[in-house]
Length: 451
Picture 1 (cartoon, helix red, strand yellow):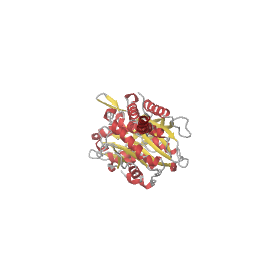
Picture 2 (cartoon, one colour):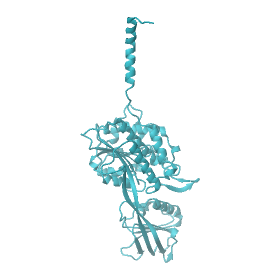
Picture 3 (cartoon, one colour):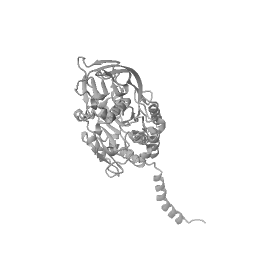
Picture 4 (cartoon, helix red, strand yellow):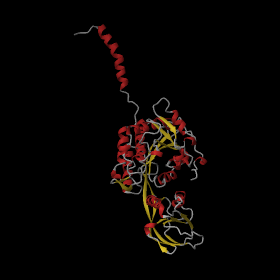
């Protein structure tokens, strides 16, 4: 059927707005944080295959190589001076090779003695000058107040621990089995010795200690990628997005499971870093340079962030988003997270200002008594003046899965975890675009509270 000119004109006028609407709909939408990436990365890192990702182990190496491949997939730049995404550095570990101890003339069984030392040779007696400090922890005493002196001695120390504290003795043994790596080759000049034995009734302690240790070098690696800034006026300024990818490895078996998978701690934060790298790469509009880093060795002393901080100019780092345990809903409910050290800079307030009108919110740390600001990699950069804060959702006072074999992917809320990652992306927008610059942290703000 032929259409009259008037009918054709009418149809054209009606169709024109529809055509325009259809054309506008083809314009690409702003990228979103990929839930698929979040899930894939956290599941890979927390898999049994990686054996808990302890630093210096094959599982830790596999985790680093996986993350490097993720940054390669995103075609991110490498940190200047590196030829790969892996920032390799040495750590050192001393192991007891031989130890002989007598207490009041009686030899002590080797399973009743713990030595914490970086010295190749020890030969102590109670008659030495200067004297080795002797500490008696009796049945009614507590070992906890003396833990720092044992783990990081500031003088040579012999501790006589009553057998009623055998559980504490085992905790010290477990810590020393996981936490003996160090960054400096020489190590601590002082040593500590713990003897599980009934203290003498007269309080007099005579001892002889002869021991040797061996030293081995362990290769550790951070995984780092860079998205250069697009605005020449701000490209020399850096914004860090970080998390630690290591965990604590193998524990005594519980119901046949000995792998501490570390799904929440901190595969969750590391997955967020990869997803944020993907998000900002797709946006491709960051004024400042963005640095994405997965730290090694957080669990054994924060060695990865310490080494990393020595390779950069802290004055050029305008902010650090350290993401630590975001796998579960926070005490503030879904679509919420908290910031450690909220009062130490205006970092948190700036992030809150970018979330006005959204479903997501960021709150100050609700657990100040836990000193969380000092317990992750952000503290290393904060001590250099960087507005460096951790973002978390963990309800740590009641978290029964923390550092256990049950911290597995099945315990995570992946939907909320993705929402938290997206919330961080939105909250960071002003800092990434150089519209906002957080205040620096004063050195006196970073001195940890006394134990």
